Image (tube, rainbow, N blue to C red; front, side):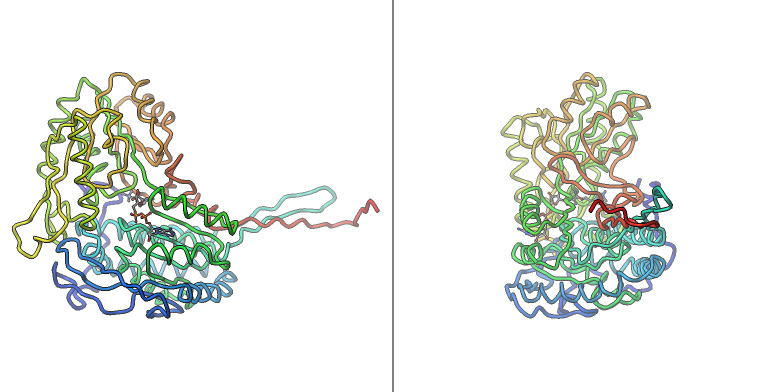
Amino acid sequence: MFLRLPFWHTATSTMGTALPRGQLTATGTFSLQQPLNYRAGGRVEPVDGGQTEDVYEPATGRVITKLLCSGEKEVDLAVQSAKAAFQTWSRTSGMERCRVLLEAARLIRERRDEIATLETINNGKSILEARVDIDISWQCLEYYAGLAGSLAGEHIQLPGGSFGYTRREPLGVCVGIGAWNYPFQIACWKSAPALACGNAMVFKPSPFTPISVLKLAEIFTEAGAPKGLFNVVQGGVATGQFLCHHPDVAKISFTGSVPTGVKIMEMAAKGIKPVTLELGGKSPLIIFSDCSLENAVNGALMANFLTQGEVCCNGTRVFVERKILDTFTKEVVKRTQKIKVGDPLQEDTRMGALINRPHLERVQRFIKQAKEQGAQVLCGGDLYVPDDPKLKNGFYMQPCVLGNCRDDMTCVQEEIFGPVMSILPFDTEEEVVERANNTKFGLAGGVFTRDIQKAHRVVAALKAGMCFINNYNISPVELPFGGYKSSGFGRENGRAAIEYYSQLKTVCVEMGDVESVF
Ligand SMILES: NC(=O)c1ccc[n+]([C@@H]2O[C@H](COP(=O)([O-])OP(=O)(O)OC[C@H]3O[C@@H](n4cnc5c(N)ncnc54)[C@H](O)[C@@H]3O)[C@@H](O)[C@H]2O)c1
Ligand SMILES: C[N+](C)(C)CCCC=O
């Protein structure tokens, strides 16, 4: 299924060259002692902070390293490092930036398997998916490398030979704050447009997944970026707050939950800092009876079960036209039961482990509550303990399909962020559009139908930033991605992201004499 998607291809043949460095190859063997901060072109221990967090391998439940949270001084050093690099980088031409980004993309591609393996170890997603994430990451860098050389303002003729022109200028030091579900990819989606526009960046990954972004930092340096152009600080709430409040930070790009997004916006407001907010969702997927059933079933699985269901844009409210409800449901359940859950580093695994024990328990509580509210568990939903003894403390569950759902149930209203699909019948187009839009979220939406007019009519009516027709959850980096309503604003990917990492200066040029009123 995965291999026929256009973006879901493998990088050509450079894979494997960087692999077995140390113990990267087997689940249950990885551990890390190196510093996790990156500043002025090298790994460093934070100068202050000192609070430690355990970092887990979700597949086994083992602690693989300890995270030292960065304090205010360390955050300041990282921002100053970025500020210094900004002085030189912002003066380079777009073509010079292009070359650095292209080389970084090439290095990511070359080290794809090594980075994907790290991502799988620290996040728990299957290695097959992690490789795709890394492919999307280097594609993102390539895309913005391509745009860097063509960033330009415009020339505007004025009366009497005078004229004006605009310059597209960088913002300065941009902060990226990431979620744990796509750690490396999120760092690339933020840093690629930021650096292409001439900015410098300080990035803070989620404390659950602090590891893979260090590879990106090293790659930028190796690719020729000035030391300090891309820095990493580690930590949770406090470190994030130091970053958002720092007076030398010009912009904050945040990926995470809605409640944290609100706090980020409040902090940014105090410093009049622009923000990009990529937040959560509870997206509708609408299946009309005239669809290709096979494609619709594939789409529903893609919309719900990638990365153990921990995907912001997942189409978790699956509205199915009543005429095909039974056929569709039967097929979806059959296919869901066949999903191979287990060791994420095994090539045939299709669903790995959830991020941590508290999150697994949270997902379980949603399922329990759904049952109490009248939903029927059609398959899955239970904890899963693999036979392999080394995996017995991992955070696994069986992917779940819920039937007999109603719009007012908690499982249909709230973002579960786990492998739980809710199926809801509908009768008319008008009714389903209204119900699909009846949510505080607006990240994504999808429709499966062979009627092309109906498809365009429905997506035009959906109040969501990213809509799919006859597919779901693919990620061409050329397309802007972002939300409506509580799912946030600003866009990542595509040309649109340039607007969010640059500012426009207008220059007015007088070619005649000054006509003064005084
Ligand atoms: N729209 C998107 O592109 C997108 C992509 C991935 C994930 N998400 C969303 O992210 C959520 C899951 O991620 P999460 O659990 O890591 O989210 P989260 O909001 O708990 O944390 C996100 C990041 O913010 C940091 N943070 C937390 N509190 C902070 C504060 N007060 N100030 C500054 N930083 C703070 C965290 O340390 C982490 O790095 C889901 O809701 C998901 O939908 C959205
Ligand atoms: C790559 N996906 C599947 C579109 C996910 C984008 C980021 C959301 O969590």
